[in-house]
Image 1 (tube, helix red, strand yellow):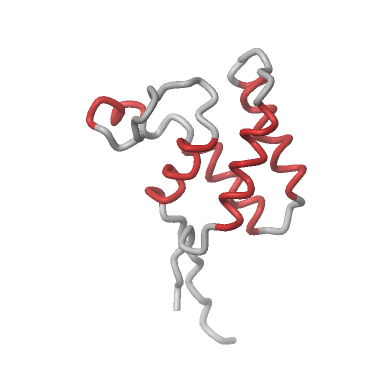
Image 2: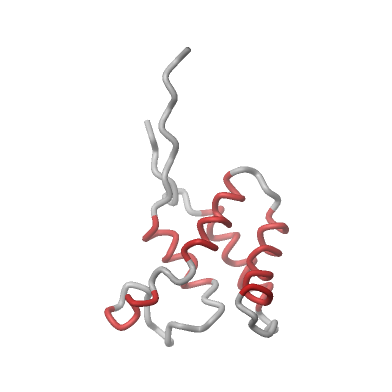
Length: 109
């Protein structure tokens, strides 16, 4: 049996760049701030598990619209936020950015 190939790993900083600039459902960052600004570092991991799950879903071939629904439901059901006029649009932008990010996953080779 051939040896198992290492699995790609997600680049967390890149994931956060995408998630915080496109999604940020709680609105933790002020205008013009980044997740890695000193004032925001305490909240940097707030969305990690949701974004990792969304990126993993896309990597496994889950249709985009299902990942959009997942992010929207996290926001409205899990976080108990009221759906906003831009809830779906932010989820769609996040999915599109995750799919477009060629540097999101490490190359295990």
